[in-house]
Image (cartoon, rainbow, N blue to C red; front, side, top):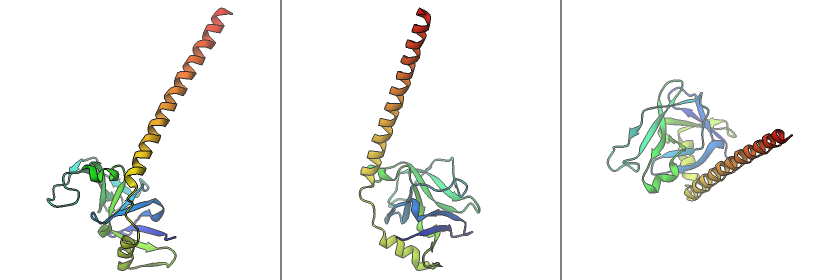
Length: 166
């Protein structure tokens, strides 16, 4: 297993590690991560629109991700995308060019490590399916929570009625 930490290329703050790595997006030249520590990055409140004609994410809206320490731009988290990029919504997309990669087992860092990582990790073609399953599970959990609340309320009503009769 490959274990890496990802550092801001400007100030060397560790912003994520390979345990959160979900996939790579070679067209965006980005690492797709589940998350990172909130004290390591800042997510802007401003909603931005990707307006670079011909870019893979043209027309998508996003929040910019910055290094908490030096405010360097690190990537994006998408809000609205075209259908073919919908699987990226809700994830952190870190731009390869904004990160340094440190290989923990080899205890080394070099410019080739990130390129090797980008090429060696397959793009996760099942990510859209996983996201869809995740949404279904969230829906089921919400439904179960509502059922439990409803049942608890019914139990309280029954208990209250029994006390009134006594």
